[in-house]
Length: 235
Image (tube, rainbow, N blue to C red; front, side):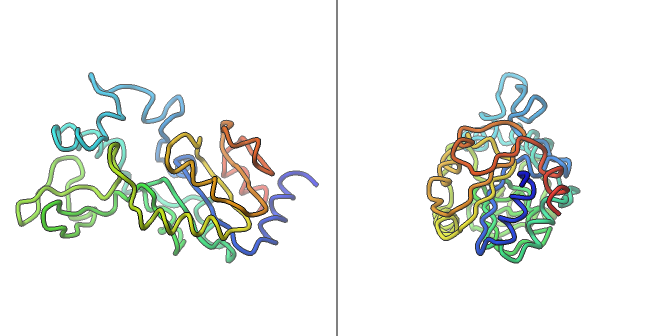
């Protein structure tokens, strides 16, 4: 049995699948990843690195420069779910999607239980009164302020900020209960998110990523290729 037929069989026979995704699953939708040769982190912007720009202290101290980068490089309101998002959304035995992405494409595709470890660009809130603002309510390329005078912040986890403990708890619980875990489009170098694979106690660990990862040796199947090509071969 070739690996694609094996993967198709595993998916069909699994009772509870958790899909763990990173930036690579959204690249076919026109959203760049972070660490490839053409990714967001592949060059510096002026005297600042991307990691510094999307940090909490930079957001607080240099909001104009933060939003200039954020609006141009991290917000893609016209992006649509691709074949991979749609495929996992229609699988009845996917119990949850745990994602490092902030683009909302899993929900757009129809996935209902999505744990967004790093938040979402689609949500914003006032840091003073906590009023909610949708992406359509603000200008994502410049600082915006609430009617109360407070600064509006994207509901994304910046460097130096902790992950939402409730989201993390739910994600880990789903991983612990899954019999199959499919990891898609992530190099598994961002912590603590990558460490959550350590909670998986199920039978089948599948890794689909263009480059190898430090977890490849622990996986039953590894596909170092584009997720869209894998989906086309197992549909």
